Length: 383
Image (tube, rainbow, N blue to C red; front, side):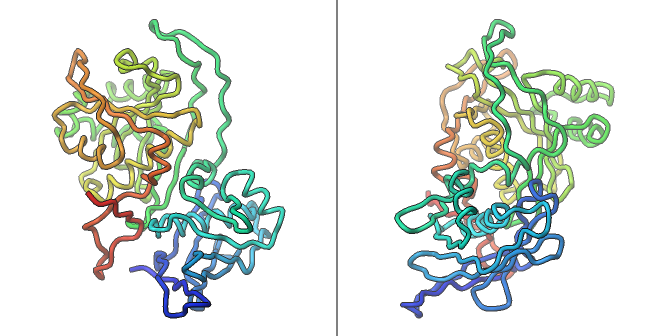
């Protein structure tokens, strides 16, 4: 079930459409604000409210289908560590994530300094006398999903196994990404693999016949402990564990392509990144889940370093379901490449394609809620 905010035109009252939000509220900026900001429908028709730790920190209303105008009536930053930017951006995320049919919307704010800070960050832009939020710009703001704005590590060349590449930054630790998934009504998270905490489920996943058939890394606990430790020690790789609502469901291994085995097979840029995946829990398979974690993983890689312009992959050439998922997610099929252990398909996703085509917002056509409504967050793209 979800709640709807009716957006109505003052001049054309008969024209309106519903802006949908989860009935229990949309949870935004969990990492940036410590506790998620909850955006929900207000008591008055067309209104919304924002809460943090159960305290109301903002309210507003929506009006005008011709302009898709979002008006903030009140904003309070008396609850630390919140800022005005956190509150406005949380509402913007809720609007865009739950209503991806909006190409943009207009926002009205009374605080000139707040407007300036949002414009400097690229979260809003000015068109004439209007302030506009555009998804292709908004979803490139890292703090809401990463918890902070990553610094660009100095670009210093180094040599690894004959490949010249930028020196890689130290590994992050703990949770690195969090995003509320409206059609699942839960938080998706990625955290850096912890040997002690994640070894039991990682060991079980790698010994699952379905996973072992692709990864060929079944073994005992000692083998898998060394596996994770090796990935953590290798500057080229970043091992992540994915969670839905805090429940681990899969292993994701990110790598820098330039010094990886894939690098010699195409003209790799110094900040191209690639990934491998093992979904270990059967309860988290299917379209609704892959449409959450796959674009979110791409989102994380593009946000983690703004110099990453391309993401590559190397699925085994006969894994038709994975290739189909990649195709739906905007990856182009480049060519087949032959590794010693497998024939793979080189696929590639451009940063510009991901953000300009709003691929963070998947096409979930065919999925519906219990009451028969289309699920929240689906952007139909056709054939």
